[in-house]
Amino acid sequence: GKLEVGASVVVSTVDGTAVAGKGYEARSEELFFAAGETEKAAGVRVLHDKLWTEDRSFALRLALPDGAPAKLGLIHQAQVTIIDMDGPGVFCWMDSAPKSFVSSDAKAHLVVERRRGCSGPVKLRVRSVDGTAREGVHYSKLDEDLEWSDGEAAKAVQVRLQQFAKPDDDAEPLVFYVELAGASGRADIAEGARCEVRVTWSAGEALEGLEVLEEASWADQFRQALSVGGGEGVAEASTVDLVMHYLSITWKLLAAVIPPPSMLGGWATFWVALALIGVVTAIIGDLASIFGCLVGLEDSVTAFTVVALGTSLPDTFASV
Image (cartoon, rainbow, N blue to C red; front, top):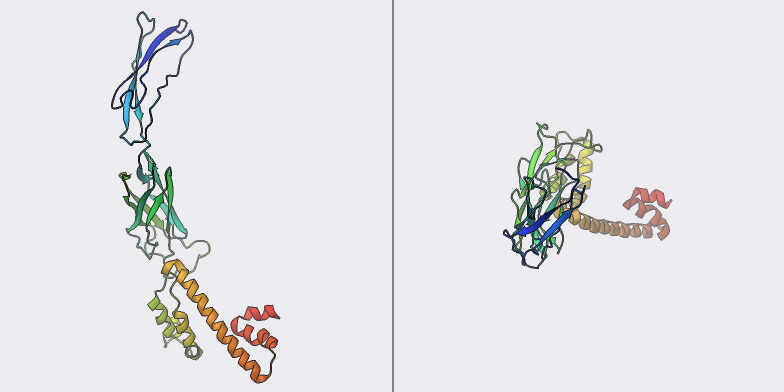
């Protein structure tokens, strides 16, 4: 229309599920547009409280005062929705698209969001579910409670991926799922609480051309310790292999006592192996001391030769 003349319009609020005085402050005023002016801002104050309610809405309606030279357009009413952020929130994944990773990745990184409110501390249970990918073979089991503090709106979820042997058909990715299993308090979980994770086999740059071995269990360690050549069998073993096997079987069985790396995230392996290293070092030190006394070597000479040679050959050269 013509913008050479001034015109007025009345802006007023209309109740919907939100009621004036409780959800917002009522407003009704006349806005004057000077000649050539094309837009003006109309604000409405939203009333805040500490009680959580469902989302509510009201409308802003335009009307012309008597004798106004202007006319209303087709869209002369706007819907305003008040989203209440005082509740514990609704948990969902950042996006619903499947997430793709390769087996050489250390972890699968996912993000959970807390929408429509983030008040108060909340616990959210997250767990993994097998698909074509299997727990313990292609990825490590996930079943934990994520603790959310007051005001926290997003959190990362990490699933450890495992190296596995190349499948016969590696064109199709292996699939497992991570789902939001339950939330404490009045927090809710949105639809689509299960996130699809796709893992494609890859040897990785460091493992290119090498065979990927599955993790051995505790029982497998003892079987390998009692087998010649770690399981190759007596028929394929040479005379040297047999002699070395029977000479070292005591140490093999002692090493098999160490828990496999799959237990407790590898910490059990670390601490037990460290303790056995201390025991072996103490035994070698005592035997070396007795040997030094028998042949008349000084303690310093024994330490630089027999002890260092019995514990670590690199230490022997470093000592020299």
